[in-house]
Amino acid sequence: MIDNPYAQEHLKHIVTSPDKYSDLFVLLGGIERNSIGYSIKILEQKLSDLDYPKSLVTRAKLVGIELLDNIYKHQKKEAKLNPYFEISLNDKELRFTSANCISKKAYEFLSRRLKEYSNLSVKELKGKYINQLKEGELDKDGNAGVGLFSILQRSAKNIEYELNKVENGEYYFNFIVTISNAQKN
Image 1 (spheres, rainbow, N blue to C red):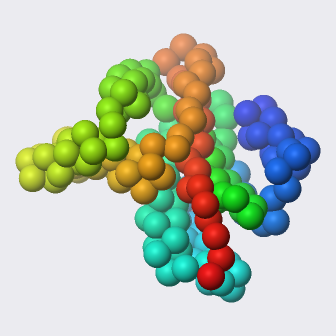
Image 2 (image 1 turned 180 degrees about the vertical axis):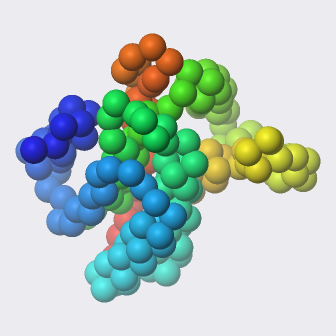
């Protein structure tokens, strides 16, 4: 039994969805550095075996890496709920779902940034991304702040997210990224 109610509900939705998903890959629990590499290799191999274009495979790998890396960097070790990562595939789209508990500080940062970026056009977003790369400043954790930009650009801003309070100082960040028109060769 899955003890994470958000992951449990999401999996139930995927399984009962009228949009039938042909493939599903799920990680539930603490994400370690080596699980990121293994997961991306599985994704790459599966998409290649299904004859998807290299450009889509590359874009999917980059989105997957960013999402898994964000879980790895920001997961709370003593969190009430386990991190969750899922990739589902059907004839119309490739969908990534990532979720993990985050601190209040990360919650405030993500809330502010996601609202700000959601209001930008794709062109404006690209300009901010390029500017951030030029500035090249790293925060105290070694982040340049370009991961979210990268995800939004590669998905054409096709995202959904929820930030739910779990308990005092702990929030659950559920992030769905969709790559539409994932057509085979």
